[in-house]
Amino acid sequence: MKREASATAHPNIALAKYWGKRPGGANLPAVPSLSVTLAGMETHTRVSFLPGLSRDRLVLGGKDEEGRPLVRATLMLDRVRELSGLSTFAEIVSRNDFPTASGLASSASGFAALAFAALGAAGLAPDGADAAFRERASDLARRASVSAGRSAFGGFVELAAGPAHPEQGMSGDRLVARPLAAPRAFEESLRVLVAVATEGAKAVSSTDGMGRTAKESPYYAAWLEEAPRLHRGLREAVLGGDFEAMGMLAEASALAMHASAVAAGVVYWNGVTLELMRAVREIRARGTAVFFTIDAGPHVKVLARESDAPAALTYLRGVPGVVRVIETRPGRGAELRLESEGARASSALAGEAVS
Ligand code: DP6
Image 1 (spheres, rainbow, N blue to C red):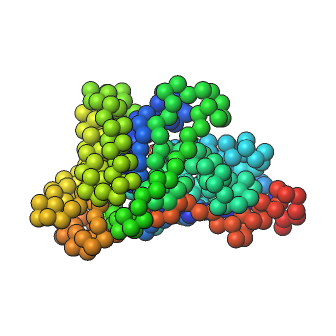
Image 2: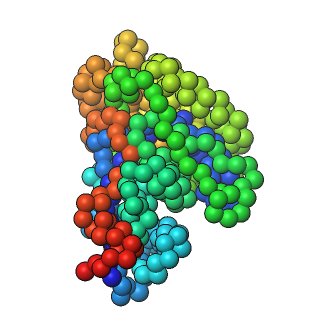
């Protein structure tokens, strides 16, 4: 019997960065983070549990994936099989409408979409909009990639640090992201301009980069101390709808995170990244409030108010080396497409016949 469901998810951009894990292997973050989920970039994923497969299969952007991406997806599917009692392998077909593995948060939207689709296909989503389902999907996605846990929700989203000494087992290491209610007009007027600094894949994954930072950076301890303070400030700025405070703190979080990484030899920036940082500060010096943030890649994400976005966009597009600039805004959390196959999967588990 075939069980199938599809889901979509969007990347999120961290304003208060997550960088570093709790020891223990449960993929729990060492610091709290705060992000905004972005409309305008999307991952679409279909999961089909198929009898007759001898192992899981992952097709990403039309290409069969082996190695680490497949191992991470299989680990998530193993958990879904454990939760649902299914024993069949699955085919995952996923595509992004933006560059994959280049620091554009494709693992966040990728694992969020996979968690939603896999739970749906396994019949564990009787109602895709159900809050308990969304939390379960957030936890499942977070176990694969911490930032993915945040893409389960739309708008501003928070994820606490994991417990310092997590208990063993399914519930002791549970950690779910939560939406953060910002003033509506503030959220609606935010624009995030994603300036793409190279089309190539990134050299060091976030997992490896933060692992090396934790092990080798003389500034990792300083980052661990500073990150919760930056997170608290960002939380207040977002709740109070203070755009400038949010922008300054987001820049500070990105710079502190990268400083700790650079000291371990983990450098994600290229020349275009530096030009873009300079451009953002130049626009700001001329009186327009724009701010940058950078993840584990060379791209620069620029925070702007809606009214300032067109001029900032034109300026950023003129920076030498910029491949393109994508305009995004706060968007929705991941969504399960239950219309057809997923609904059939759920009814199958309820004991009805499925073709
Ligand atoms: C710089 O969530 O990709 O984007 O949990 O190891 O998969 P893993 O890491 P990942 O790291 C994201 C790091 C970041 C900051 C952030 O999104 O908070």
